[in-house]
Image (cartoon, rainbow, N blue to C red; front, side):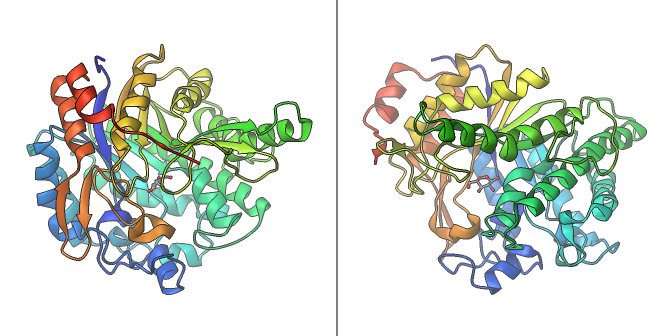
Length: 424
Ligand code: BGC
């Protein structure tokens, strides 16, 4: 199978850096909300081992890397920016570039500085300019090194997990609040998109690309003949992802979203960023997994076809190149990740959509939010006690695909053929 899509890897600051930075997830750890009790202050110690990690990436032939900056590190108090943190990221970005690795930089990936959270965070429309000030700062500091940006990672997951199910900070349980947060984040994205373009233009650059990373999945009724199941599938899809898609991509805010910043309709993405993991089989307005399907180690259905269906949903609204900004799986023993990668790439390669890039989630095992260190998504194994990195079999497979731009029959037999998903 020939591979024309560019293959890279993805990560997020709070999940790999470690260090004692005060953000919402340090607070969440202190409240005992991480299932295995692990502390994001440890994570992968990427803060000290960044060079080793980039060297490993280069060794694997990786040339594109989606990473994020930690807002709480860069702006530890409102309006007070930290020069050391800026220099750390600049050194990292410069080093990546010297190794031939291009950054796609995410400006917000789930964590907020505590001072921002305390002032209402993204539940407060008056905070939209506060986020934009940070975006402006980041682009002024890194704009000479970075031309491609993801404004916000998964506003829907952030909103639903933090404000509806309450498993992410701040742990609220209100659908109304979750929809308000989605609205505020959509406004932030739209304005950040325009701001990034304006600032880089002023800096003399014409090659800027910006978008957001949308978490989309397929919602299907458990029983297609059951009208309640069908309605719940449609409503869930609308509330969780579709209303947000059109707000962020086009500035079209339909019920239940609200355009707090009165941004005009437009086209607010240069690429369609898609984070794809699973499908939901529903009987109510809650998530569900059907019985007897292939599942990963967190119980999520493995449904490769959904990556194309989800991308098509975005492309229907705005015809832009598709970047799979995240796709990967929790496979603690690395026993089916090669098959997972192969199956998803096959669907993407056969698609008529302009899929240009695929960033595997994740480069290394890392701090997986509520699951802590217990859920492994990496191509590279991390022993969290010793911080030793070891390329997994799936990492070898990925390296071989990048090198050959192909999955040959030999590679298929070596890496994929014997692997099976767990069916439950
Ligand atoms: C998030 C990542 C996370 C991954 C696996 C995505 O929703 O953007 O931060 O680690 O899923 O759960």
